Image 1 (cartoon, rainbow, N blue to C red):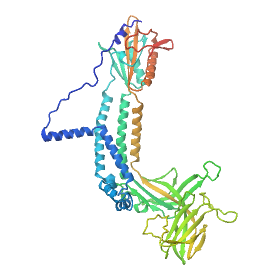
Image 2 (cartoon, rainbow, N blue to C red):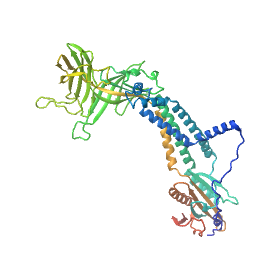
Image 3 (cartoon, one colour):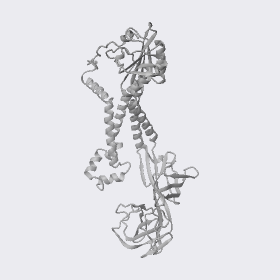
Length: 569
């Protein structure tokens, strides 16, 4: 088949001009002297601020300050700990504490450096993103796929012949590429450029993904900062059937509010634990023996201006009240211990011992009302059955089918105001031991002049109440991050051209499908072959001999499609 028209399309191209030739910038007229220096300095600072690298530097600095706030106690949250660091009672010492205080490390989020860096970083991100967003929208609206003059300029080229006219070929190619979501441009041809359909794909999605990826950091950082300022977290333990707590600052054992969270943000509802359900895999030979199978609280919530209502908190189903989330943190047994001295009750209440590595629970009873003080070291075993001789045998099983309370009694000074000790710790430095005993529920025992009773056993549960209003913004930022990262990593920019040359003598059209990939060339080779085959089938390509070898021509191997022969790369 004659190929003189096709030969005209593959003439050698002239060497391209040098990339990025040096350009001499014209100096803009402007103020001179001191005013000019100030203007130039401001413009230089603005250009430096507009760089994405500058925003990354500031982000790293903010991350470092946040790390400092993680390891150094912050005065708005734990003022007592900060006071101990300053006095030298805790922390690295007074000299280091003075340095930390001088640089504002005890209040990082309220320091001028942190606020200045935050504002500058947002200004830098805004200056970086706005021009890029405008350029991307301009690209979506106005950019068109470029035309090509010579097929040899592309990476992949395939040819075939068809009896269809060039107009039909281009219209068919337009339909094929439309279904494949290519951006298209029809070119009728002129003296320098042949008639063709130019198409492009991946430019908008790849650049859009990169832009979305950078915007996600903008959203994430805003959510993190606002979240740190508005968050709240409090913890409290509650015994079954006992008065619970209210949503107020004084009711929580551990209280950690954000800088912008104050007393007026509490909802003032009342919380009571009606019953706690817990069970385990009790068969020692079963998989997961000893593991909990149930961890559920039945509670009653009383709104400040409403009727009480029942609710449940499960291990995987926290309770939500307004904007707050209530989860179960821990649980344990709460034995009621009554202490009497000479017939006078000096202690009557439930204790909340904590579990140890040995499977038993350890706590303390402190009765400063006695004279001298009475202190009990308490060891509680949920399952301590009797052996054949009638003696209790403590085990590490967690179920309370044979509970036993073992205590060691002390008298003296409890040192309550002199030393720091938790509710389950007993300072015995100024106490004398008076022996001990063990009790079952409902039993009493007398040691010296002190009578200790164990009337009943209940359970206690530790709850965490938290408010994190920035969570939706964090999720949105994470979604933007993933949504921008996928096209930025996997989208590829490529171009495709469908060129035609009509030979009226033979009544056929020579079709050239050529393309270029800027990323992922292997994937584009498969896509190019698929587009070529689909177009050849659509226009009913006829068999043709391959054109003679020409410089820069990448045609070569034959691919048989049915009874037609298609030249492919």
